[in-house]
Image 1 (cartoon, helix red, strand yellow):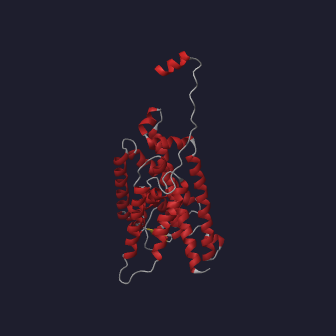
Image 2: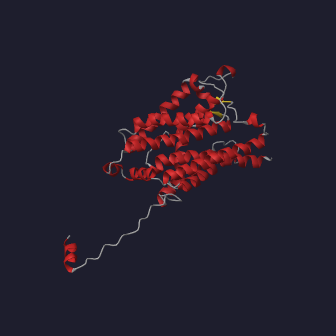
Image 3: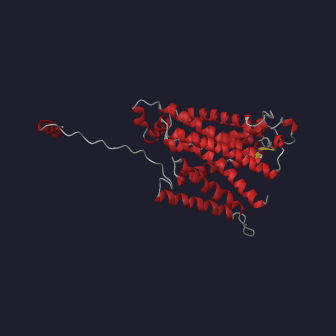
Length: 335
């Protein structure tokens, strides 16, 4: 298998994983209106938990220190990554969603992201500090005995299966009464509360579900690239996902998938392999940020609903009944 095909397979794998991440953020932001600027933190937690559950004991690997080290088989580390990320999401949600709304809630999540980032980076015994985890075993590679190229196809199929599952799950949520309640909270939380909805409980559920998506996506990512350190989950990565949602169409799962293809894959990943300018390694990353930022501004200015906007529900109009006599007509006219 030639290098070009392997490169396209790697891009497709990253695209499938990022779709899961984007749909999780879409449940929180696109459906519920939760401004979670710490979203990438939950991806990292899922990745670290999955990696440390799949790795052997730290004493068996020179130069790394981390907790757990259970050498558990796939898919147990992946499931645990999603569960722990979801549990951490509930903890953050209890603090950020209980009394805070809108801008204050966003500031709280940014603070959580900064605290988590510095804590994991500086406390080396947890997940090997700033160096992060490395050498995470590829799922089922030894058991299947596949060559490198054939295993890439196998893992691509695994990520595709997970993406399809999460897509249909997201679609079911979107078209369910639960999803309609989430959108009502997004549009006007006070009106939802006036109709008797426990908005805190609904937002906490949305927070937990979205963080589970992030944890599973992070677990798939670390099992694919076999390593992760804090440099791979900075705050800027969260805004890349927000850009994908806004440009593609927040609230529309198909639009979010298109935005994910456009922003994290075409502009973030594919441009990494463009030829570098002599003695100017910074030009390509700078151009990438300029293009994404400009596209985001243009979208917000000319089409704020996104390229593929969310479809609004349409209800048939019910004509008023004709009055049976003149007296009824007069009563109607007088109110």
